[in-house]
Image (tube, rainbow, N blue to C red; front, top):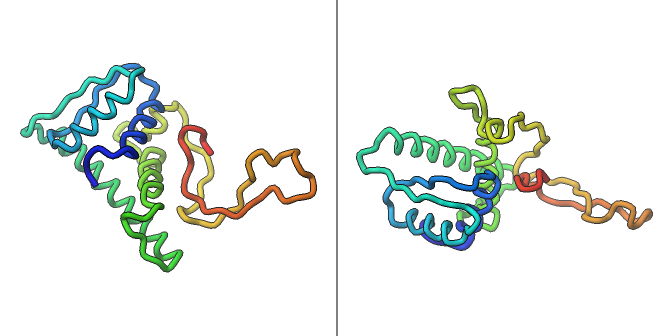
Length: 173
């Protein structure tokens, strides 16, 4: 859904924090919903100088590049969703609690693995190194180490069953 939503504001602020810039330009088309979202992000981000810019309606080259990226992300989301539905034998609705995780994971995959014209990935350009962390298939059953379990109890299991939903870019976990 479009417009100003708390989750969208929070995610955008977190993503902008990860970039590490003190000033940036948030450019979009002139759609009222995205302009309202940008303003809400700017109002919730005091440490960052955000310049708001909207592209001209006739600015097809820039809009086309962004629209291509959006279509690629939508395709990645559909691919991961189809894999999850096949794996679990269910239908994942767009209102499912897993949907935000799936979209975030799809975007992260594109940043980590999709090479640009310069031969590098967005991750490599931001971090200066190749992404090498091992990943699982989205929705895969995994064993996870319980938080704060190391050294606390030598007899009880320190592992629990979980579902892999991606890697948090803030921590790499």
